[in-house]
Length: 526
Image (cartoon, one colour):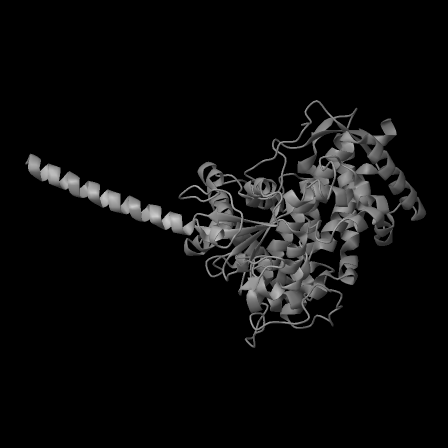
């Protein structure tokens, strides 16, 4: 009996030793990938590679990427490992230019892996690649031209007026309020009106149905956090497990709402100046000629991006793009406005200069926010740019190498399938490009200062053919919201204002932890 047990234990020990030895050899070989190619790397830890903190504590891995950017100082590129999969972090702005523009044909994929069959809302412009992305980008280009945005501008201004009215009702004697919630409700009103043609009145009713469903998208939950982490670290597993950021009930709500809206408009011949109407025109092939000012789209197309396969704008395609419009317009704009008000509260001299410009320009336009007045506010543009520099909503851009290519100025040939990380937050806080990067200074975006910086050192919306297609609309929405507040209120820090800020490392985009509490004083009361 004892002999049998000893023999079994011996066999178990031998088997365990073989397994451990095999794992050691496997990880040793896997973690020599960058070393063999002469790329500086940080020591990985099996089995997680360089991302053990994110995986063990369930945090957004994009914050780790920012730390890696600092750790690779002095190097143009650096090697990382997601489990055993190699990733390349890029610090050099010339290489970033190649990846995003010059050699776009080698990096057109984001590397995101979503199953569109199990969740149709995943099929939006941000996540898809290849011919489907190209066809959809071409079709959607006319939707976001200056002319089309101008037709929606009146709706944005009306929401700005309601933002002012709603704040004025509650602001008494310098009351401290959580501004992120108000700005999120303003953004929701803008998006619901301009994208879906729905007057949801979230500023009047914080518990409006559309607001509650939108809030549910961004409520942290295990499945969302798992999907977020795996999309950076192991994208193929997201596809295999059929994971999605979008809860199923949220998906059902948005798809039904889009379907009902389209059916109602087509049945009753209803037309409106909004995103939904333009998507209906795409579906019915009645959208006018492209106002072709999307200069970022590649002139020379590649085999991977060309396809003779027919591409139809279906109801699910419309729903996916409308959902993306909601996500991008809601969260990024409200977050940018929130951080901007925070900095203006801490820098009253900048706030006063901005207010003086707003007063002057609005005075030329009869006190009204007009489309033309937005572009006359040069200092406002600098303030928003500096906010996006210091607080970029998307802190990391990902690309996937789609065919082997040698990196400029190196002996490194990147292989197909390797993930490329462009750390935007790290780039925007690099003192080499932005001295004293924690200081809020809108003059960094004077024409003279911009000329002193290398191109591609400022990438809040990405760049090249995959630059954010809704960038101009997002900026308009953001500026109207800021004008509506700054022209009517003095923004000040309160006893609940965090200095310095702490970030919510569970959030999908850069977000302050614990909300944003600021004091608003009605200018009429000063």
